[in-house]
Length: 273
Ligand SMILES: [Zn+2]
Image (tube, rainbow, N blue to C red):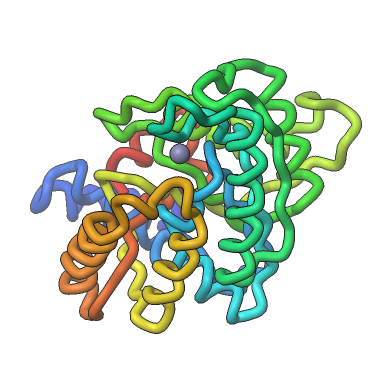
C-alpha cells in the first residue's frame, strides 16, 4: 500500500512531467496550505504592521474594513513617527509627528480599528536591528494575531528604507515568534500567515467593493499627506483597484502576497505560490 506521502510524491511527479516542476509544486503547495486561498477564514485577530501612519490604510484599508465589520480585532503597529513626511520646510518634525498620530487615530476609527501601538522610531531611520525585531516579536506574542500584515520588502524599486526594513523585520518576527529562545520570557505564538501589501507579485486579489469607499474616507483623514494631491492619488487608487478587481471578478480589489509562516525559511516554495 502506498503511503499518503508517496501518493503525493507520485502526483507531483505526474504533474511535473506535464507542467514542469515549478507549476507542479505551486499547485501542490496551494492544496496543502488552505491559508493561501483564504488567509482570513476563521480569523479572529489581525496585526497590521506599518512603517508610517497611513500605510495600513493605503495598502490594505478596504480589506481591513471588511475584517473589522466581520468582528475581527485589528491592531495597528506603527514603526516610526512619520515626522519627516512633508514638503513644507517650515514644518517642525515634532509637530508633524503629533499631527500624524491624530490623523492615524481618526483614520483607524473609519476603518474600525480600535487598538494602536507605536514604536516611534525616527522617520527614515528605522534600524535593521535585533532590538526592533524583538519589539515586533513581543507585539506578535502579546496580540496573538492569526494573520500579520506588513509591506512586501521585496518590492524591487521601493526606495523608502523604512518600508524595506519594516517588511523584513516583520517577516523575521513572524518566523521567530513561535521559538521560545528568541525574546525569552514571553509566551511563543505562531502566526498562520503573513499578508504582504504593496506587492508587485500578488497571489491573492481580495474583492473589496463594499468597503473601497471607506478606504478612501480613511485615507482622507491623513490630511498632512494627501490633501494637496488628493485627486491624483484617488485616481491612482481607483485605477489600480479596478484592474485587480477586473481580474478578481469584482469592481475593486486589493492585491496581496500571502505566505504561510512555514514557508518563510529555507524553501523556494514561497517564490512559487
Ligand atoms: Zn510609509
